[in-house]
Length: 83
Length: 272
Image 1 (cartoon, helix red, strand yellow):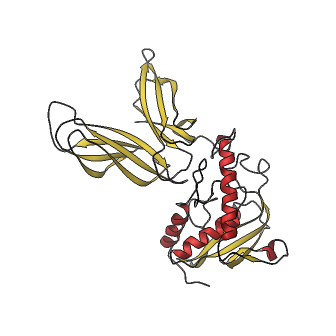
Image 2: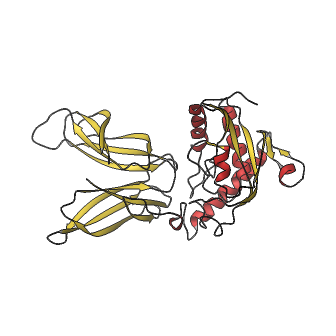
Image 3: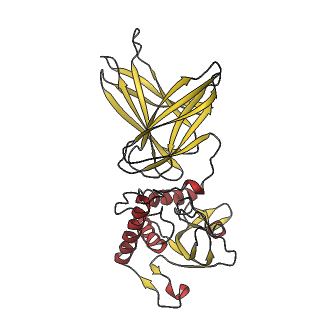
């Protein structure tokens, strides 16, 4: 397994936003997760959903929908792991 | 002979034409029906040449004649004799500068996921005695080679569009039939890490479960669409787990089709 940070995101308080990242080999088993980089102790800050598009025989696009569960802006890393 | 391009440029041109692939169930113009491999190659080839020429490239074509028996996951019969194959085939070519000198590479998304050499292109068509002949890109239908009749051109792309329309419709009809859209599970073997192949109707949500997993294992589940359809997300999923007994659990995976087209997918697992 190897991991990485695909993007650095910012999301306003209470907002839901979607990011996409394309040209990932379909043969890879990839999981997506987030890590806040703006500490707000006491409550969860983010939740996310992943959707996939098969762009062609060999590549796919991941669509990651992020929801800010707080009233304040949150910055975060969009992380992946190739299993 | 046109000047050679780099391998990177040939891949870029492959991606350019492959980005036009038809979503099988909707197949809206001006998409190219690469997922209907049965027939229509001359229309696809002419449209691919048009796109590449518009992008500044100088493609040519290669024609092959023989008892051609290719294999495709996108034809319900899979391969010969389930699928009778072709008497001939055509695809665009590029001259590509390689470490071995200038080579002719073929751009054929109906058969490959990237540019390939002519020898590779010929080899998957199942007839070592097949005959290859090159032409310029403007030959729409190389009838003198195929049937001993006068060749056809199509400078206005009228005939090309007729061919593409016809095979888009056949792709849509097949996708609406009992076998659904390509690919076809009977043509596929499950790779390692794939627990099941699934199908979903338009906008359908369905739950699958899989039991007998050791509770001590750390298992992650992901879904990968098999039906190709560029432009928008197709599927999303949620995982739930049931502790069945002291040592085993059952995973319940709920998959949602986000599109108005049917989608086939594979359910994947990884033990961390």
